[in-house]
Image (tube, rainbow, N blue to C red; front, side, top):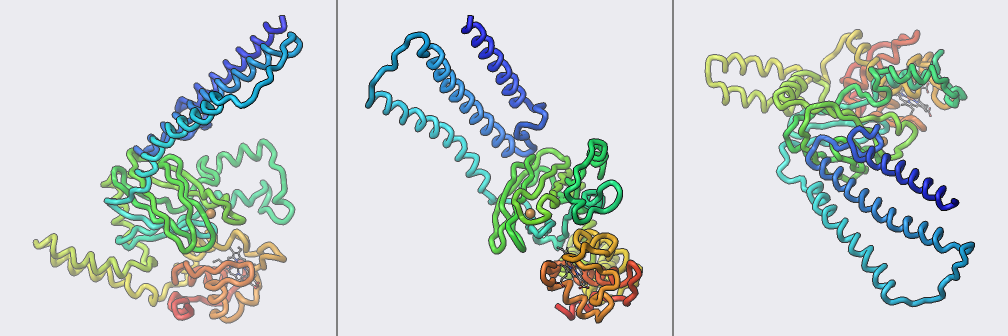
Length: 433
Ligand code: HEC
Ligand SMILES: [Cu+2]
């Protein structure tokens, strides 16, 4: 009678386990399983993961099955007497050989995939990825295109919101109600905390080499769907690669505990068909005079224009090219209007400063001072620029921002929330470096 119940429990447990395993095996596993991903390598990684998973299931079933069977079948209440023996050479050889064979069986296919992951030769293009507290920088090597990628302003504002106003002090510890949590799910187009202002745009079907490093602490660049997860270590460059097969948007996060806002530096990769990617890249090269590399890229383009189009169109292009390139080179020295600086400054402020100094400029005293009526903000521009570039105490340096960005954010702080302390131009920032 007792055995009957045990048998039923055993059957029930195995059924539940089998269902779970079957679910884990399929794509529609409700997000519990590793994703199959969109590169050949990510598929290999997934099948390796499944292979080893099944080996574990088999070992677990055999070991626990035998154990449970022995315990139940030979229990003391049935009158069994324990056997008394030791030093069985056969058993010892067996339990050494069996795991050894299993491990070798796992290592052979795994090594093949690992070697492929490390093989960054013959890449079609290279993107340098730099981690910062708390954002990513993407640089398309040889293209003169680089930019920062930060949590969107919408998610960033929402994460600091308690439903009534901005969180401050003890309000961080507030427990959210179900309704409030539901509301958060719809923030930022349903991508609350996993959306960025500037996505990493890549072409499909091209081998992209990633050079991964960091400017401050250790971060890790992780996008599960393309099977890339690499540490970003200051002073050290890690290499890996991906060749994406399917256009789409693939999200990831920083996978290394890298400081206070570690959870707020997501990654978004947008894979485009090659033609669309090329159009995007051309547009990046055309715009943003702020990119430091723009003057380098421009002469190349000028040189290429007459060579490829030796027709009537050529003189026009040659004439147009220097004109387009001209503003790029002396961009740092060019003066901007207050409106331009304020508009840009607000973006830079939201992305870089608002977390501590708050969108209202009121800060979070006593640790994060208010900028409203601040001595530094009202004082000499040189000191304001210096503190922004070099940081002070708990404030990190912002040297990595372009001259334009620093000038804009300083101007923005000097002329917002009732402050009125004049305009700072990029040239002043360049001089202060
Ligand atoms: C990680 C938090 C943090 C971020 C982000 C941050 N700051 Fe600060 N900021 C501080 C702290 C802390 C101080 C006080 C430093 C001190 O005096 O020791 C400060 C002080 C200042 C002051 C001087 C205020 C005063 O009256 O003493 C200015 C100006 C300033 N920050 C500008 C900026 C700008 C511009 C940015 C964005 C580009 C920025 N901060 C981003 C933490 C931060
Ligand atoms: Cu990080």
